Amino acid sequence: MNKVRTYFIIILNSLVLFLSIDYFFGAKLFNFDPVNLNQDFRLQHKIFSHTLKPDYEGTAAWGNQLYKVCTNSLGFKSYCGDTSKLNTEYDLVFIGDSFTEAIGMNFEDSFVGFVSQSFSELTVGNMGVSSYSPSIYLAKVKHYLNKGLSMKHLIVYIDISDVQDEVTRVFENDIVKNESLITSDKPNLSEEFNILSLKKFLYEQLPASYFLLRTLRNFILSKFDPESYHFDYERSSWTFNADSKGYGEIGVNGAVERAITNMQILSNFLNERNIQLSIAVYPWPGQLLHETGESLQVRIWRDFCIKRCAMFIESFTSFNKVKNQLSARKTIENYFFKGDIHFNRDGNKVLAQDFINSFEEYQKGI
Image 1: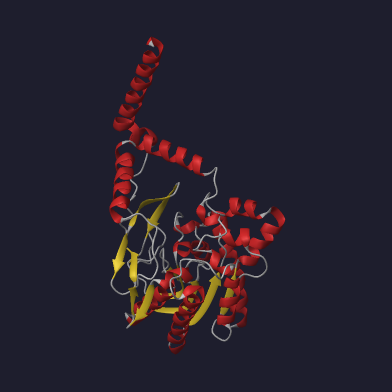
Image 2: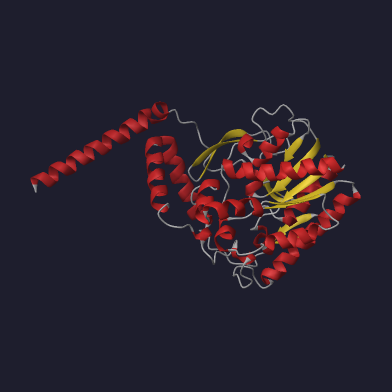
């Protein structure tokens, strides 16, 4: 009994000592930068739902990744210290969701950043923000063009999740309105706030403990497949399962039609202003794991692009080539963040190279 008590006291004293050192010296010892865990650089917008704070510079966290978030005066993700902050004339503008925003990535490590570096003679803008979809692409592009923004070519990176996102959105009178057509299994706002508050407290007051706990958590989770890799994961399974749940009364087909309709309106709007439209698509881990043959995502948007698009870029072929050489699992391991649906730096390089190849061919034909 005395031995147990002695061990307990040693452990307790060691813990108190560790927490004390962490509290008083953790940030200095580990040279931690302040991190925006609350991501309050994300703002609501009355026209197109949400956007990024203009002229912002800071460090944010995504999963196990710390990354720099910098925006220009329009709230477009950009290089930190971007000298073209007041620019309103763009040669190329990209729009999409979190993949195009490149969540978890510095701008220069994202595919838009790589494209910008490859075509330094062109002015490149990135309108992409997490959770965007065709109704928001339409509303945001119309809003900025009506405000005087100039662009020669819009490239829309349409995500797998865009179809489900369109279920909850309606484009009316140039504004995106939300509809509660599907239920959500997300925790309520008070639970999310409490979790964020705890994370923020740990990071600011006990940074070493925060990273230790996060590393332990990620190690445990790495032993299991995330839900997004499962065959029946509703956000991505619609391309190979027409009965996929989570699409409300309109179902998968109705959601696809809503996405196509909004992209048709956007195409017509751009055509009236002599602005070129291109569309790009890419796989999620679920597509690499579960699809056989050509993806429905590719067929839908390739058909849409006939007579509408300057370019149709699909990165399914590039990733499937790697998959055929290595395996689906190895491809996911090499090109995606661990346990996540988002591309890492190498995955972004693949997207960039596919765009660069297509754009160079397009330029030859101009």
